[in-house]
Every structure is written in C-alpha cells, then in structure tokens.
Length: 182
Image 1 (cartoon, one colour):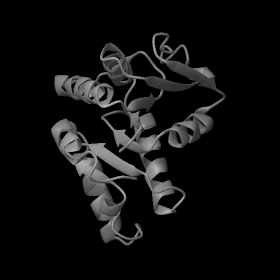
Image 2 (cartoon, helix red, strand yellow):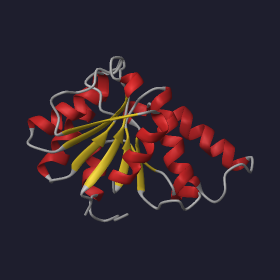
Image 3 (cartoon, rainbow, N blue to C red):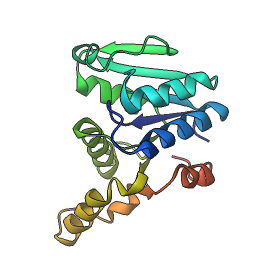
Image 4 (cartoon, helix red, strand yellow):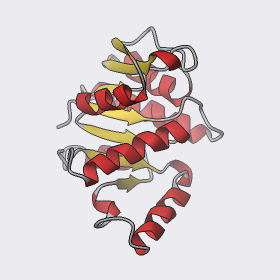
C-alpha cells in the first residue's frame, strides 16, 4: 500500500468541470485511506482543489514550491507542510523522493514537464514508481497518440505502457489500489 502519492496537476482549473470533480474525488479518497498528498504547494487551480480536498477530509498534505512561484501559484498556507525550495529541479526531485507513486491530472506545460521527467526516470531505472495518467474526459488523448507514434517511429525504448498506466476515471485508480505496489 502506498503511504504517499505525488499528484502533478495544473495551477489553473481548466474549462471542464469534471477536472475539478476528479481532483476532489481523488483528494477525498487519499485522505480516507491515510495516503499523504505530495504536490506542487499552490493554493490555486487543480493544485488548490486537491490539497483542499485532502485537508477537508482529515488527510496530510505536503507541498513543495519554488520561491519564484510562491506568489504566482499562491503558496498554500493551510496545509500540513510547505517546503519552499530554490527551483523547479529541486521541487521535482523532492516530490519524487517523498512519494511512493505518482498520479498526473490535467494540467499545462509544468504538468507535462513533471510527467515526462518521472516517466523518463522510470525508463532509465532511476526509480520504479507507479505512474498513472488520469485521462479525464480524454484530456490526454493527443499525448497518448503522440506516445504511440513515437514508439512506432522507434524513439521509445520498450513499451511506454509499461512505464505509464492510463486510466479514464478516478474509480479505475481506486479499484486497482493495492494491486500494484511500487
């Protein structure tokens, strides 16, 4: 069983209300199952939603935010622990070290950066943590198609699906919890 899960997601809410719903559901489930949330430390967007959901349901939230983003992402002052770090590289490394697995929710460039770094580290066997991509409302369909194309063109070692599990709903994550241990 996982003790902590890193959730990478946007500092904005996006346009589909289901994005926020899934963040709330995931946060509630994590809190109810004693799983600490490790996330980017912001109080806005999807980051704020999942952190608030975990806190409101009695869970632990560990935020990691770079000094340069403290104002932009509005560093969350109402969570269990907030680490203020030097830069994005330190943020990502600390988040990876603090988590047992990772879930990627919808987000923008920063979320994609975090996703690609963690699956690259997984591919290079720097770690073997479970990485789950929550494809809410088909948000990541184009990215999945690109991964398929990249593999067909010979640019991905092995089968990318062995390093990244794609699910369409929070329920799928919840039903598989405990079956896959990092």
